[in-house]
Structures are given as C-alpha cells and as structure tokens.
Length: 209
Image (cartoon, rainbow, N blue to C red):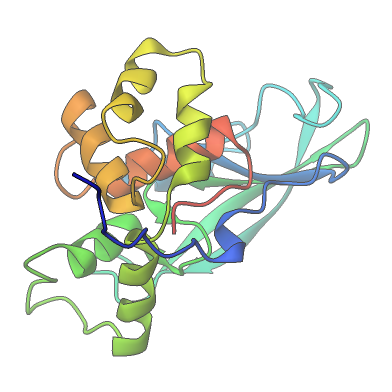
C-alpha cells in the first residue's frame, strides 16, 4: 500500500546553517554543566570554562576575554547568567562557552523550552510563553530532521546510527529527540538540552530549534 501522508514541513533556514569554516571563534557547549549551581562556580574561575584549545587553529593558549550577561526569560531559577568568553592568543578567535542548560538563540533555559513544548504544557507556576513564540517552537520540532539524521548516520557511532535507522530520512525533530532520549535514558527536562548539545558537537552551528 502506498503511503499518501504529506512529508513534514521543511526546517527553517536558520536551523540548517553550520558554522562557516572561515569563521574564527563561535559558541561551545559545556555538556557536563547541567545546573545553575555548577555554572556559577565555574564561571567565577577564569579556568572554569577555558577551552583546551582553539577549534580554529588548535592553539592551546586562550585568555579570558570577558563575561557577558545572557538573559533567561521566564526561568524559575535565574533571570540572567554570566557567560565566559575566551580569546585565542594565536588567531584572535573568540569563543563563548554556554552551559548545556542554556538554549542557544532562544533566550531561555532548555528546561523552560521543554516544559512549554511538552504534551502537557508548562506548569501553571511557570511564566506564560507568548503564543507566537510557542507556535514557532512547536513548528520547528515538527519540521524535517533530514540533515540531523544524516549527521547522526555518518557519525561513526553505532548507537547513534541505530537511533536513526528505524526513523528514516523523513523523521521530524521531535521524533529524533524522543528516540535519542529513549536510547540513552535522558531524563525528562533534559532531553532537548542533551540532544541539542550533541548536534552542536557533531555539526558546529547546527541547531535543533
């Protein structure tokens, strides 16, 4: 029997742009930093988030450049966090390091985004997300994940290859997140953060949402 279902909508262009190879610097995700307490301890220490090397030129000396305030709208724990920024002593590449729980480009923590886009929605105690913003997030999660499927399929990791094998090239992003969370036992509230960090590591610049 033929499958007459319509293919999922294409992903927004901003989700499919990798970091240009000519770009000096960019964003790094500290995947082991999953809570605000750990982040505050590390960001106060110049060595806390210091990268081992520059991803542009592989020089091993990076100086603390500055700290910038990042807004976390509607977050129950903190409205802002400080973000550590380093500069390479060799190529002048500038690297900002985000803790895993901060959603890149969304101005919120991943916990807030996941709660808002979950089937039950955010709890009443959480500040209301604007309807237009919530609609955009949900549309992105329902969009094609073909580029992400290819990224995982060619990662060389047999567990990641198994995640995408059953889904197929037309999988949507939410299905990919759910399959990854099931395979690696990601806890509720951490699933978007875990998968987004993985995608950014495998394909720097690529975004889940």
